[in-house]
Length: 328
Image (cartoon, rainbow, N blue to C red; front, side, top):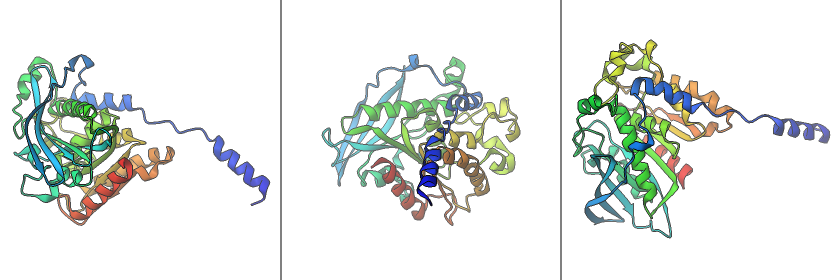
């Protein structure tokens, strides 16, 4: 290319206006129509973290803790701190969210029967401080959703979980061993969409990994959204939107678009009977233009392992390398 044309080409490239980031406020308002409003800052109380127990294990310390998420409510959680993390050598951190399982937080730290779901255990061994809280009503966390709804505290278990997870990020940022600018979130199934919903409201989460966590509402169970309507999730999907995807005020494409330009990885096995892989591909395709416009196309990634509703070894390898790339 002649020098003059090269200079002109460079000038035109540099002169292109920056792409507009997604309207996250508008997207959150759409989500709140189904989830109920995010509590105001006045709901915050001091974390008042308490250590219930502590064990020194191979390469890390495991602490059972509780912290106050709001008045009269404490969240039980496991905190894993690698021996390499100190106040002088701060480590990145990961919020590790469990699937639908009675033992709740115990599974991510390796106290369950499935190693494939032990993300906190795997990641602490890679040098991450990991926090694994109980979702309300799982593990040691007794929670009365109906009482909370009647008090007007929440309109969904989903929003309560988001609030708790945001307080969990507050807790991680308070730790001397944690670099508060390098925090991510990962989860499988319930933990997968719990991670996504939380990251839509909390931009401090710089990398998001969802395994078997979502598909478009139209492709979920052939369009029957009843599975999303329990008190643990979003009862308004039934009471106000008739379990009808066409009436939903938001979809997962909105959620993923809201992440841009942050890093998001979807692990979506092709044989997942909970979340149709075609619906995952629809969501990713809808979000791609936003990531491309912001010139961060590599920050949006999806893989489709030949597996069922699981977090297979292939997916975990890609996920952990993806997290390392963006947080280390």
